[in-house]
Amino acid sequence: MVVRNEADWLTATLGGEVVLMSVKGNDYIGLDEVGASIWSIIKTPRTPDEVCALVAKEYNATPDQCRDDVTRLLDTLKQQRAAVERS
Amino acid sequence: MTATPDKLLALRVGTTTAGDNLKRAIEAGDVVETAEGRLQIGERGPSSIWVYVDHGPSLGCDFLMHFMFDHVYGHAAVPHGCSGCYKVKVGLRTLRELVAAWQIAKGIQCRSKWGIDLTNPFSQNVYAGYFYTAGLDGARVLYKVVREAIDADPKLGAGITMTIKRGCSEYEIEVGPSDSYQFTPEMAELESYLKARFERSTTAQNRARVLAHWIDIAYRLGDDTYLDFTEGRRRRAKTLTYAP
Image 1 (cartoon, one colour):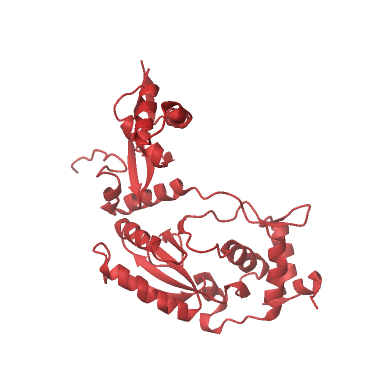
Image 2 (cartoon, one colour):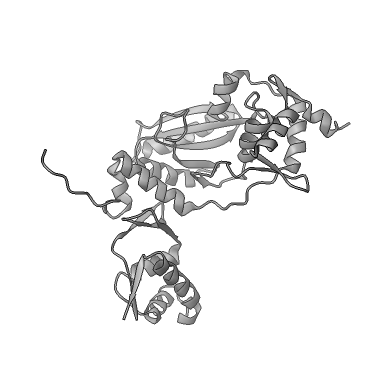
């Protein structure tokens, strides 16, 4: 299974803060710094394990330390249809 | 000697008393009195549309403006707690300017708020920022600091309007010119008594909602400087149009 972000969400970065906005609807999602990294990482389709590994590398942590944050955000993105999972 | 609550609430404001106003607000659901005697602003209260730069403690504007002024004084008196409040207002024309000024404010040691002023019926600015200062002298000192910073910023400059005002515009519209406000020790005592009973809304500010709103408003106004913040992508796809 790989996850990638949906192209019909735009990324707005204002004053260093990142908000995702649905181009079709009125939904939005605020991202913290790690969230913004994850969003950027899944511009290319990735497995959740790959996302964890890349986030861990960026923040000098282990993939297991990042797993909760990654899983939570990917779930949110999928629920809001900002990301899709494909086999 | 401290006055009793009944005596405090008997304070005359306009043609009525603070106690009568409060009773009316509770009956109307604008103020909620809990079983423990705590007072809260009802669900119809305002939700914040501002981004705050929290340099300094919260000034308790929800208590002073949305509780005391709106409900207890019934728009007939300016709260004593606002007597020293002077604001340096920065009027901004585009989202680009708003974000640039907000970034400047982060480096100035003064509490401020930034956002869309379009829904403020007393403002002619689409976007604005407000620095909160204590006293007119303090406002004048801050004005110079902000003016210099804005003039030096290539995205802002001397074309940005700045003014010093006292308290909230609503006060002046309802009560009269801000240099003639009346404040009494009884008002201070009443506010102190009610503040001890007042319970602030604990709703966390949804920063993402506010920032998304900025983008939406800019887009709808045709202020394409929002594209600076969206990697050049449009908020909505253009729909097809046809030759007449």
